[in-house]
Length: 266
Ligand code: ADP
Ligand code: MG
Image (cartoon, rainbow, N blue to C red; front, top):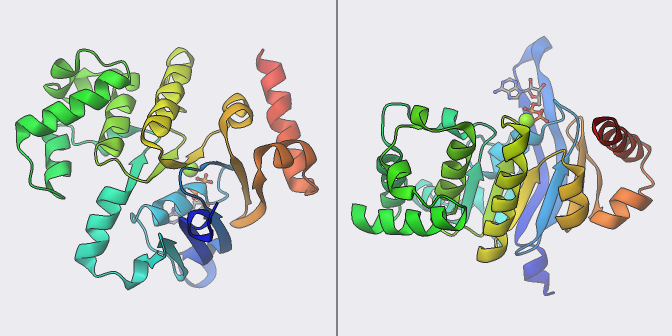
């Protein structure tokens, strides 16, 4: 693997805090890591450790206080606003914990997807439907015509998450960010949606950062694990090394609690 591939996404000394004065809270305290092209990285850490904040900054929803992010060697902070918007819309796709909440409730799915795509390229409504349909069929939505003509409230939670996956993948991004994409779903559909997300990633060779506590997915599929605690990187390495041989006491504790939880639920 070349140096460039190793550093497809580079996060350097990233810091972020919220509030000011006595209520100021440092959420990311100088994070450093990189993701290679096509790599699947799982982000683990307790609630409040900064996982969503980190993904929101990478996805351009929020901005860092200091440090920088580069993709393919281009620093996001050096880009003009126009280039940055285009870059974030085409290079990075985001799947949220609750995709329904990220959609406008009074506009049909097809209209919203078309608006998102046409913000970045000249495309007809018909062409958008064909492209959305191709992705939707791949993730088990054979009735995509109906879905595209529906409002978000007319669809189940699982269907809305699949719409979210479609919207994130339609520009064929090189990086997919997925923040607990199944935690709001029924247990029976959780597995399907994760499988569909992973299938998309494989089909399009997309690098992915996934926040999940599904240790089965982590062990079987992830290339790397990043363990976050209190806004700092506690561990970062190949899946097997982190799961089985981490020297970090916090990571060991986290792994034990995840495994313990899993046994309790079997
Ligand atoms: P995680 O996703 O790991 O649970 P978050 O990144 O959502 O953690 O949050 C980390 C910390 O940052 C939390 O204490 C949260 O309350 C705080 N935080 C996140 N977003 C904001 C915000 N927009 N304003 C103020 N505090 C925030
Ligand atoms: Mg979160």
